[in-house]
Amino acid sequence: MNIVVCVKYVPDAQAERTFNASDNTTDRENVDGLLSELDEYAVEEALKIIEAGEGEVTVLTVGPDAAADAIKKALQMGADKGVHVSDDAIHGSDAVATSLVLAEAVKKIGDVDLVVTGMASTDGTMGVVPAMLAERLGLPAVTFASELSVDGGVATIRRDGDASTQTITATLPALVSVTDQINEPRYPSFKGIMAAKKKPVETWSLADLGVDAAQVGLDAAWTKVESFAARPPRTQGEIVPDEGDGGAKLAAFLTERKFV
Amino acid sequence: MAEVLVLVDHVDGKVRKTTSELLTIARRLGEPSAVFVGSGFDAAKETLARFGAEKVYRVESPEVLEHLVVPQAELLAQLVADKAPAAVLVPSSPEGKEIAARLAVKTESGLITDAVDVQAAGDGSGGVATTQSVFAGSYTVSATVTKGTPIVAVKPNSATPEELAGAAADEVLDFTPSDAAKGARITESKPKQATGRPELTEAAIVVSGGRGTAGDFSKVEDFADSLGAAVGASRAAVDAGWYPHTSQVGQTGKQVSPQLYVACGISGAIQHRAGMQTSKTIVAVNKDNEAPIFELVDFGVVGDLFAVLPQATDAIKAAKD
Ligand SMILES: Cc1cc2nc3c(=O)[nH]c(=O)nc-3n(C[C@H](O)[C@H](O)[C@H](O)COP(=O)(O)OP(=O)(O)OC[C@H]3O[C@@H](n4cnc5c(N)ncnc54)[C@H](O)[C@@H]3O)c2cc1C
Ligand SMILES: Nc1ncnc2c1ncn2[C@@H]1O[C@H](COP(=O)(O)O)[C@@H](O)[C@H]1O
Image 1 (cartoon, rainbow over the protein chains, first blue to last red):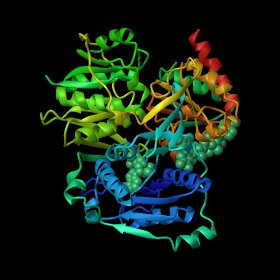
Image 2: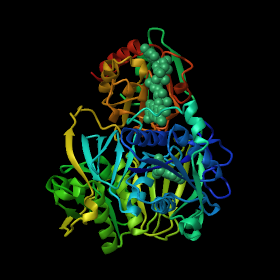
Image 3: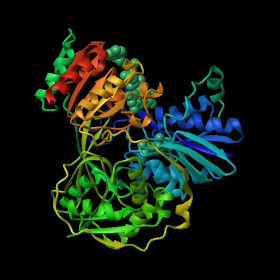
Image 4: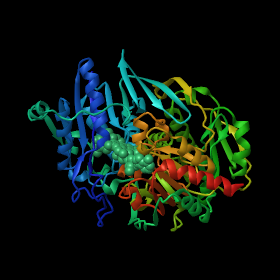
């Protein structure tokens, strides 16, 4: 079983995230980055499948030089090898272009049975790259899995929906996106950290993938951010201690604001 | 005037409020044409007509829904090719976004997700001008689509539904999903019991409980019911098994933007804020006066929720009588 896990390097959500004023793209230089927390669940799930059977986990990222950190973390967790697609032309790419580059990289890795992704990146939070990638690869996708099993060439997931809980199957090769309900990602062990240093990481450019630079990057984006503005900080309202009348005061506030 | 396709969100013909919002938005861009997939059209027709759908393209084959989103993306792609619409609007739900993502690639069109406002572009180009809220609600972004047919996934509560009679003339489409669209299928579906409360993302008022409930949501629910509110939960409460995951508010749960959000026994971690920060009015009840949630509130009570909520519930009930 060959599994590719797509992981994204994102600005730390705990830090002040912002935009580059010059081109309205996400600022990825001045904010410390890391492996998107939600992609750790994808790495963990892939490792569990391989550990229960056999095969290999390749982690794939598209991102700037610093994104090598995301691969390193996944290798430390236990993935077997890494592929880093890095090219200056990729800067400013939207989900559509990112999915194109990911798709070509998955094809080049070759012989892939299962692609596993996170449910959404913690920066863009669009949650559309998995479906776009599946579309480009011509794969069925089962998304937002809170449970996954792979058996006899079929991936089966459980999905917790508003109206119902569903069991969904897809024939391999397939793409699965996982939620943070699916497992508890492991921390890299000391052994894992040492072992990661010897694991192979390939760095590919767009030329290596045969992708025309004109198809990616800011200029090729199919959408354009015209402007951005920080939301005015909320002004803190009244805070009262409960001196036996806290509930009454709360009701009075809600009545005054016409919520009652 | 060009058509604007609106993918109808419904359960067996019961049309969700988001659809009337999308039809209202569609009228700003052109002439709304609803796209209805599945059974129950007779029940849906009246609502679609009331909110201005001039046409309804529909497909009844159960096959389409059984195979999840790909057939729906194929159907919309066929309509985009046939009707050359000015835009395609879908609900910004996980399913809606997945359909939109595949449609964007199929039709080589730009996609905007999680829009909180959609207007016709000011330059008269026939394009769309959208507003999104990003980075956990800390920034507002204006974006446009520069390629293909604008595809916009719109969040619930992004417009006030306005009634305007439409013909809702229906046309049953000849559509068969491709074999490739059938790679995934729903093999089992266990319906959930209805709570009788409003749906979380659509509700005007949301009351949420966190770890501070210590597993007892009864006071949170009573308070919510006195206000006719939906009930939400923090991830800590969901992970502890106290409340269903579908009620989780936050980065990996639902993103809500109600008129009023009340956080009870919730500290206000960044991942929780990501799901409620854009609420119009925010209220918190928390024992700890240093809880970060208080940075956001319009009104806060520092106190024990087991004392504060019942008192507030009683006062609200009394005021209503
Ligand atoms: C990848 C990832 C995704 C996440 N996604 C989400 C998400 O979608 N949604 C989400 O909510 N969290 C999410 N989290 C978790 C988040 O970081 C917090 O751990 C969580 O929100 C904390 O929940 P809480 O506020 O209920 O609990 P706590 O942080 O433990 O806060 C409990 C609060 O209750 C107060 N309290 C205790 N007893 C009482 C009482 N009797 N009366 C009044 N107040 C009382 C305490 O003072 C405290 O402030 C995510 C975390 C990660 C890593
Ligand atoms: N640049 C990237 N490199 C690798 N994987 C990515 C990248 N962007 C998105 N993904 C994958 O797609 C998922 C959803 O991302 P998004 O659609 O951006 O929210 C992530 O959890 C990743 O698994």
